[in-house]
Image (cartoon, rainbow, N blue to C red; front, side, top):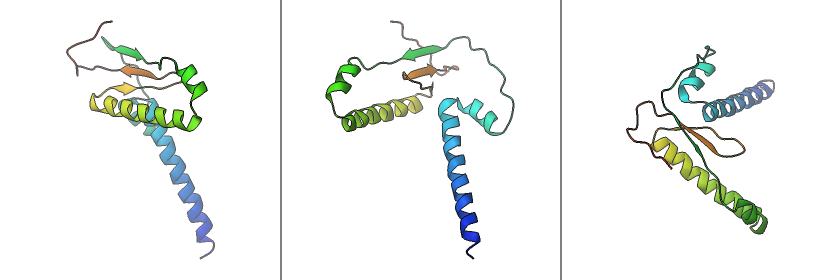
Length: 117
């Protein structure tokens, strides 16, 4: 019985890591690409007739972050990203994040209007 316990712990740890990797895969890539990668299939490049790339920035973030405690900054960013993620899902857009919050909107016929600024 004691030999099963360490094995069960290893399996549990591997499943947790696999779940984390899967979540990262779907955070980084659009579902169609993530599905293919998860299944070990080759991903073919696609051409899109029109895409929108949206860059967001928090104006004054450096000043804010130098005067507000880290816990409050973390909570603020958590609320912002949670709301942004919900809007992305609601509107069927794919977002890719990096050091700057970069959102790539793949329209694929979902919208009939575009905003120009």
